[in-house]
Amino acid sequence: MINKRAASVAAAVADIHDGATVMIGGFGEAGSPIELIHALIDHGARNLTVVSNNTGSGRVGLAALIANGQVAKMICSYPRSTNSMVFPELYRKGCIQLELVPQGTLAERIRAGGAGIPAFFTATSVGTVLAKGKELRSFSDRDYVMEYGLRADFALVKAEKADRHGNLVYNKTARNFGPIMCMAARTAIVQAKEFVEVAGIDPENVVTPGIFVSRVVVVAQPAQESQLVKEGRCYP
Amino acid sequence: MARLVAADVPDGAYVNLGIGIPELVAQFVPDGREVIFQTENGLLGMGPAPVLGTEDPELINAGKKAVTAISGAAYFHHADSFAMIRGGHIDICVLGAMQVSAEGDLANWSTGEADAIPAVGGAMDLVAGVKKIFILTEHTTKAGEPKIVACCTYPLTGKAVVDRIYTNLAIIDVTAEGLAVREVAPGVSFAEVQEKTGAKLTDERQIPKTSGVNKDL
Image (tube, rainbow over all chains, first blue to last red; front, side, top):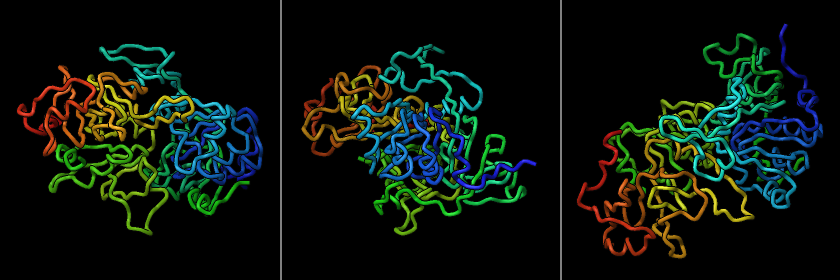
């Protein structure tokens, strides 16, 4: 019988190894899997390459993972936001690498990686510094730059509802990178607010089909990043 | 300025608004027009800010501010969102600018300074994929330097991507022949607009009169 439910957030992230590439869902705090990230801090894997749209805020969640020295490289589109001090500080000191990717190219690279597409051409970034050194091709008189599909060893994703097959439903704009990161990771680890019986999600409403998900752990009352930042919290 | 942009957004348009001043455009959509706002973090049918105390941290816009969803809205993941943008499905995008060139090059994401943290977000995708790019900006910098220039000195967001510029002094179209002034603000002369612009302008205030630029949408 298939049962992807993990006993705890600690058990769910236990095999993340040093040097792994980890995709972390979320756009700002919406969809950020804080409890899984904190479990990864407790677990201690180092030298990670993290793929995530932002670099976290305050000293909790993704920012805390970076502050804890576990991230060697960030692949992201916007490593700067209100209350974001950890990444800028380490970046200026040369302690962390950055691969800056336009947001749509980042999403498409992840989607392509998950769909078995090694590379594709896009008009985004043509004529800018972000296209430097990349292969250019012209189709119907327009220039396009080649970008590579992106895969990961693990993904950490936040969902609203899950069943034992790993079928997922998200909440509003917290969906963002979740579905495509589940596709692109060899092991997709999901924290869901609610765990339902297999018939509990109408097949018409499944957003991420369970085949893309390896593990589900229930976090019934996830912390909200902005609230933790407001309270001046620091993890660990 | 935001009101002038909103007046040029036709009924039925799908529109993406950049972070900051462009967000104001949503408030000025003329009565009787149905305009659908897309926010690239996964919502088509973005409504106004929520009533204080009813904010949902999982319902935000690209600027990470709390918003609402109108009835008939749709949520989707990031690859679908950027397929809307990069696939040419969005009609108009309104963005801010650091510099715009005579050829419609746009610089709005980086000063290129050595110690700046580079952050691009969705700007390069929007200018590459959206049908019409409108720029909403002050005509000059706070120091009085022209923002409309012969050639951008800041790193580009995209080459030859801007269609129209709305400033506090004028509305200017980027055309194959160069920058054409379509309208000037009350009490402002063409000569003054030219003086505060770093590229050559032509006075085309008569042909055609304002808006209509998007009749073909």
